[in-house]
Image 1: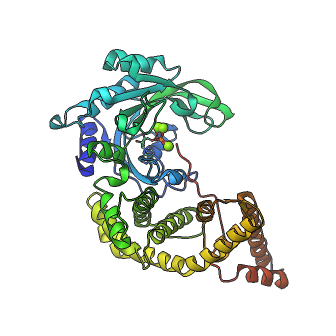
Image 2: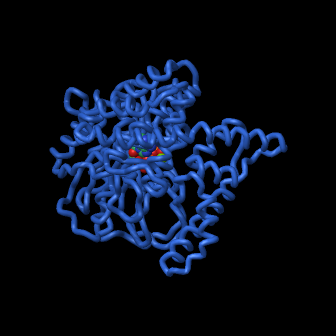
Image 3: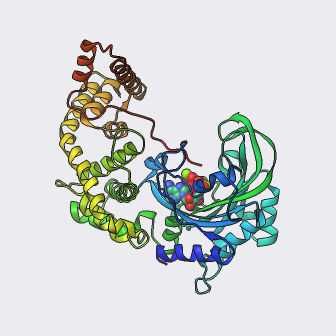
Length: 476
Ligand code: ATP
Ligand code: MG
Ligand code: MG
Ligand code: MG
């Protein structure tokens, strides 16, 4: 089943059951606490928090999502993309646990010729929060899932919360058993690659009080109205329904792998490392295209830095694979070819998207070679002096002068067996930011010490890298 069909069936299933279809919001979150949208519920947050009265009691969407914290997983696990689409159904004080569970089961297991996804019920494994007897009862007694395929997990895995005070509650996840070729048996509690998580049902039923982190806080009591927030990964379901090994090989990704092999001459399937690189390129070019499409431009802070990191990582992986010339235009063309059906604005905006990407590629290629030489020399020196940690100074220099995002330095150092003094790097970044701030202040008040200013300008040298902010977007 094609991705477009998965999407169509999702929306029509929930529309037929009284849900208002809400188009995907932009990846640029309309929310000061988030850089980018990491989940389908984000556009509905004010309804869940009770800040705004929802105009409908039920909604459904297929939301574009970016999760930068998953960047390290990309290409290594079979199921993590930095960009993916989250299919969701939402209830604002309307149906609750039993309704959500029954809908999910029905849609997943109804045969394909009857409008569902036709998954084999015997391959579905359920996790519930350890104290959520009610959810377990519904899965077992109402839906008929045998107890052996229902597992209880703790707060870290199966509990959700947002803000203090704010809604919280247990969740229940549906996982698909891909079979023994994906590893040992034992359910999702044991093996998350074989039993791949496809759908998370969140039951917002309590009010959260003070406490630390995700799994250690007080629960104040029941919410006045109980809500449902669910998310299913479209690409993960596509991977299962299309019978491919991982989410980079589905219909809306595979052609990018093919293009990258064509541009580099490396064959997919030849070696583990080059396969990972090809998948990283594929994922990152999809993400970059979607981000630029939504108006992000590469920069040194915030969203712009997320985009820069992702693009530079993709470009470097293409070099590792053997590409020598520019690559992003060709790759983006393929991404737009596949995603344009669902996002026609990519097609109309093609010229602008490619122009932005090309400028970033040119800027990076100009400094990549020199930066790589600096890094190699630093690695050799560190090793010769018996060290195993690349200094924060070097990482800072690479960032500041040669445009190397820190995780590029981390990755390149790791390839040669070194770690990096990240703390030292961040200290230098902070100092630089403070100097820039003081300088701006001095300019404003008219007491600039020109000597100090000169020094900063010299130190900055040829760079266009002057700032750094935390770029991890929160996940829900
Ligand atoms: P995982 O445990 O596999 O990292 P998650 O628990 O972080 O997933 P949720 O936050 O529950 O994921 O998101 C809801 C659904 O969105 C998941 O069940 C999955 O299908 C999908 N999803 C989450 N992260 C990704 C990702 N990085 N790439 C593709 N799909 C994802
Ligand atoms: Mg995750
Ligand atoms: Mg999970
Ligand atoms: Mg989950």
